[in-house]
Length: 183
Image (cartoon, rainbow, N blue to C red; front, side, top):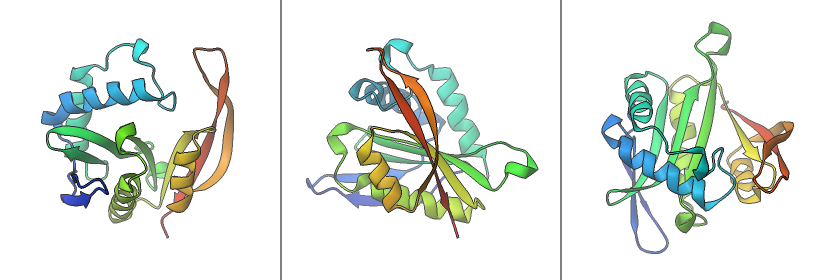
């Protein structure tokens, strides 16, 4: 589904347009995800894992566009995607229909400017409208900035997957599992 377009004024004077990415934005999504995977170890992939598959991204975006519940909240400055947040159904089974899963990334240059909070607020409001009763996510245990944002937005830590991520240097990071009950 598509969300209503919004505007966010960044403290640096730039204006971010918040809207849904569609299938025609697949290349922008691909470039954004490749860039964010190279900026920090907090993403699920390294750049060496290979290029993101453009056809697969196009199909996923088309599926989200056609969905009555799944959606994306994307931030653009001009034609460049600088932020990406998606909420998708955990599973299409009756017992899971109340649960959404959230994934998010913002270019490092635009972190610390309130953009993540704004995108998250838009997403949580839309998730509730779409019938989700809770939104879940996983975050690297050492990603203090993201954990703070999620806590500020009402997420609670409820579990941990030990050694969920093994970095190239051989060290491990736990994954903190969080949930926001959309009362």
